[in-house]
Length: 127
Image 1 (cartoon, helix red, strand yellow):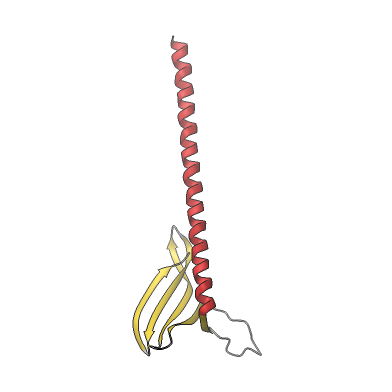
Image 2 (image 1 turned 180 degrees about the horizontal axis):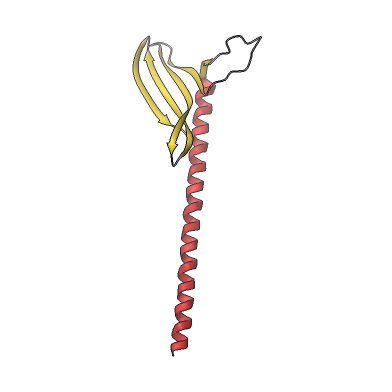
């Protein structure tokens, strides 16, 4: 009887360990899939904004002599409403972060203007 209980206990412990490993694997897989979907959405949104943008920057100081730009950001203007002269200036920048997310992250700053007046400014992390 003791041998049967010992075998049953061993099988039960092995089953619980296998079930725990399965749950951890499922959680890691769903987290990775979620991160990939968020990254796709961010890239899709940025591609749409860049397609409709104009006045991209930063520009090289002298493109003939030194055409390479050393910059950690991209800036462009999108026109929301030509009649009211409402526009947005997007700035996508690499920002240093010293925490568990990594050494840096991508951050988007969106400034909304009506004419020359700043109406709204928002900063959001991208990746």
